[in-house]
Length: 461
Ligand SMILES: Cc1ncc(COP(=O)(O)O)c(C=O)c1O
Image 1 (cartoon, helix red, strand yellow):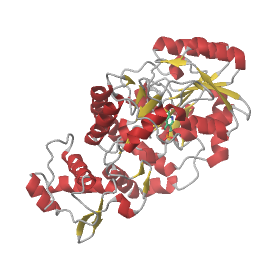
Image 2 (spheres, helix red, strand yellow):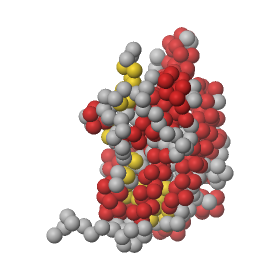
Image 3 (tube, protein in one colour):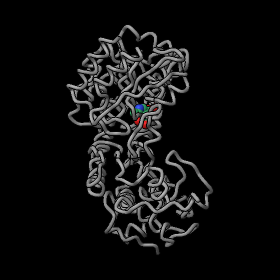
């Protein structure tokens, strides 16, 4: 009978068992079609409850490593045998550590969703209400709950200022649709979230980079860009910037807000990571509520598939954004907003957020252990780290060589605005590793690689 040795795996037992399944597949000890021990047998052998084995097999199934067949048991299904099944993380490769995407850490949330759906299913009055058209900006009770939830990031707002969108990405799109016209110049941090650039491309905008440091946008560079381009909008992420982890201090936020006022520039404050940060400075939207459009979403804290985001906008442009919302989708699905509201009101959202933070602290400790000696920006609450590569490494070579060792990361070229000359760097998303063990395996390989010289390229003659 397959019996995992769990001593060298950290974290909850069910995760350790799922990790052990992945390791056994990678080492060839488990093969496609192998039958795993019954829940009862493995529970007895390992001295854990049957429930733990059920969760472990469910976790392995989520990773695409196991298939449960009713009445017959659980069988190993290697992804290669399944044939290129695609998940958001990419192809499932049990022997590969994929650190490419910023995701909320994939704890098992199926029970939470199932419970809220069951509660909703027994509330026919509510179900009939949410099946109808709603105000474009969202149902009042959904907006009230969201306004309260955003208070976690230091934002004091009310339901009438807030709109419900289909996620943060949708919120950026709607805001830029409302504020800009094709051909407009738009400013952003020089190294920024690629989804923002996708929107600028789609809307025919011309993004211009503003130089940044470990506090994000540099005020003098912002002012120079205002003088040179007379832009209408600055997009920035003041708390846990993606990808550099920059955090704007309060003084920096005040300086940036003051320049925006002086040059009549709207600021889009992307706060999708702000809920994770402890003791964050006040949001820009608190410092300059008349100039800032604040964006947040459920993706990085609750679940990316929830697809709920929020925009809080000054009165002057509120209706322009809600017009964009109505023109493009009439309203965000009230069904999913209702689920999200139930999670907020029941305290579950808070519990999930705290779980996420605890796990991030441990993952970022591993980051520090393995990469702390390098020029790597790590924050205990961040979903990712930003590593500037030591000479003579180029990011393209580093990524290739890491991939040959089965670790996937992405380089600075994904994040550069226009022709900005960024340092050679990679982003490592600890949040997309399946577990701490899995992450540690990848970090060990990356740290070893960093201590070596790049292998000479044989592909160029
Ligand atoms: C900075 C930033 N803003 C917005 C988003 C989009 O989030 P959502 O999934 O809510 O659309 C992301 C997702 O990675 C992000 O990193």
